[in-house]
Length: 248
Image (cartoon, rainbow, N blue to C red):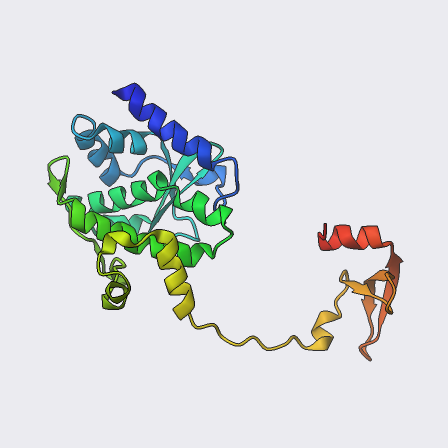
């Protein structure tokens, strides 16, 4: 059984770590020991749920990453990273903490990071869709894991986890018909975007910026911006301009 579980996790990792799958950067000094609350949970899971235990045993734990206020996972260098905010996980009971662990495992098992990256989707919005789908699936299909009743965690600051409300049910009466991608598209259609103001022309005149001179393929780099908003340019070749602009 251990070989099968190890192979299952290895397959997931191999399918995801070859591509950049998350904006969160792992720094070596951030890796910490498994937090005590989760260490106790691992000991409970080992004889009762080997898959979740293996998931936690193979994870690198990163405390207090500036981009993670709660908990999160990704895969880098072929290893699972479990990001956590210590104050966040301390507030929960074993039932709620296990809910979080199962939730994060589902993100890995369902290749959410890989799927959003390969499709070049908005990772934040895709994560919201994934959170909703996962929470509904856990609440519907899992009442207990390893003898512990699962309970939806309620953060003191942010409230309960994300769930799908009635407007989603109107689209699909059976919640099982939703996929993370279809829910993402549904959320994207209703997402309000703030109108972007065009940049002030003078703000574009900064040293180091590549500019086009005239109508021909004549390019230059701004070297100096004068007080009267004129600027001095050093000519460069079209090839160098494309390289600097990262244009194929």
